[in-house]
Amino acid sequence: MPLSKTALVRIAEKVRAGDRLDIELVEPFLTHSFPETTSFARFMLRVAGWLTLFFASVLVIFPEVGEYLISVLPGFFLLPERLAKALDYVWGLVGKPVGKQHLMYHLPNILIYAFGVAGIRQLWRKINKNNWKDRVYDAQEKLRKAIDEGNGRFNFPSGFSLLFAGDGDQVAKSLVVDNPTIGPTLSSSRPLYTNLWGKFISADGDEGFVRALDQFNTQDAGEYMLFPVVDEHLFLPGPQEYDAAPHRVEIAVQRIREYEKEVGWAQKSIVIVGDKEQRSQFVTSSIDGRVASPNDEVSLRTIEAEYEGVTVADPTDITLRRIIEIADGRQIFFRASNQGAEKYSAEFYRRLALLGYQSTREENLVVGYDISDLETEHQVVSRKHTAYLPVILSRDVYDLLSKSYLRDGSFIFVPALVKRELQRIVDGPGT
Image 1: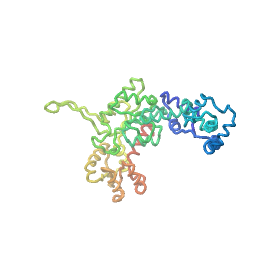
Image 2: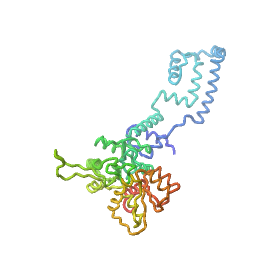
Image 3: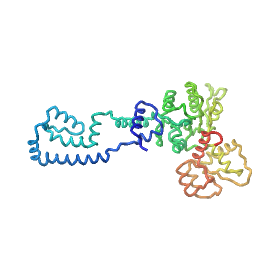
Image 4: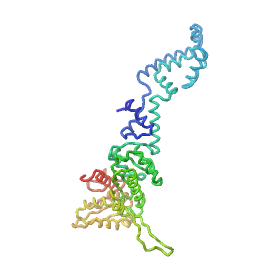
């Protein structure tokens, strides 16, 4: 439903004042447009057009008729010089001055701007830039600029999530696309999928962090979500295949907790989407080499243990638990190209062991995962293994295979699996 004049003016004033805007009003306000002319205005313009054509014909095509009319018209049609100049000033605002003193030459413009409703509006807007529609136009432009620059100010429904996402993070994107009101995306560049975002660069430090949180009603948020993951390495990532190193994640957690304490808020939940086994290590050394001292090791596992209210959603563990559920006691084999097996096989079985999996049946389940999803796609299409469970990261490959080759329970699409787990964590126990 289009916004009323009262609502438009109220929203425009909030934008101009720099107040936060309720998110359900953002799109209706940005997309609102005013019709150039109504049906009545179009009728009046047609009338004015024909009358104008008549006078233009008299003055230009048949000037002798115009001169005759001028000669027989009463003397008051000859405008005072100052009035003629005043009219010319007005015509100069919207077109070209007439440069004549007789009223006959001004009649075409008078008809258009006196009888043409659209013309009156155009003239009024040229003279007075403070009418309510102009205030709305100006506020729309201000809001668009704020969104482009990542400093838009918005109010979300209570319990929303603050999504600290890396550039192009597909899990965060999927959450927002499914539910635009889930919360703002905080990123170093504008996401293409939402207007409800804030620009946050970790290098901006505490000042940038506080500025980003102030754009939203953060006190009403339910949790913070951090995504130190790389989309193409959601499952079994290497030691340094992350978007943010574990020690940088710890700095973010510390910053959040210190800010909450500073402003007197109760602690909110922090959900971190990343791999528990990746770690940052700090050692002490001398000129002769390392000095015996406790290593300072930081991982998402240690962060979860050290800080209250922190939950790590590990895509590898989430995926392996689903594999274990599907295997149901069968022996689990790992299949990949030579390069994929070299990179992932040992870590795959190590992580399975950490979860305590042991086979209890003679049947087999072949899990496929590789350097890229293109190799996995080949294995699915070739159909060489009937008990083959592909683990897929790419949305494009998943969409392609799901049309003809994938059946329910015959595949694992990791982003969807992680998203469901995040929704379960946010919704709370029992979901």
